[in-house]
Image (cartoon, protein in one colour):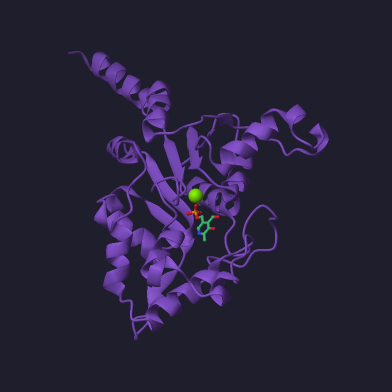
Length: 264
Ligand SMILES: Cc1ncc(COP(=O)(O)O)c(C=O)c1O
Ligand SMILES: [Mg+2]
């Protein structure tokens, strides 16, 4: 083969290697359950005292989860019980294939979740996905010296009404992109994959070339459906926020994988 021929092959390979980022939500996206709600089954009959249930707020559930962990500790639940409980949760269909494929292609995979680092680590370890994930952004958690699970805010935020007070996924995503940009990495395509209302803020930060991937029949999907069909919603067109990204609805990780393969 001539030198020119080798160069031509090299250039073609370079052109084909697109830089992609998969930003994945955890509860009801990577896993097919809400890990925070799942842990409640460790309480007697799966029921918590009313004064703990009363702490739940849709603007932030960190105090609520902290009280659940304290209660579970008080009734004798140990770290190992929590680990076994987390290990029962199944991954969402097609997600293991999606991650494996993207990892083999050296695409970057990050998780952004309002669960906590202990649950996510336990599940990633059990499902052997840990080494495929570049970074996990979530509320820090740890077992204290006595063995009680403690949870802290990821950050304290007051700039975003679409997010909880402890974690704004849009800010996390944009800060990550900025940091990678400074390191010389700019992604050709970003796939943001989620299910919940807390995934709407990061969806709004995406560009025209990116993809927001709402799980079909879940809250993010319903919200985006309303946005795209304003006549069926009560709000007027002017009030609606602008979503620039392309929309890829999914019910299996394989739906997303199919689109990724088309872009390569
Ligand atoms: C208690 C609780 N935990 C976690 C979540 C969502 O977590 P994630 O960001 O991983 O989907 C919710 C969403 O409403 C929730 O109510
Ligand atoms: Mg979710």
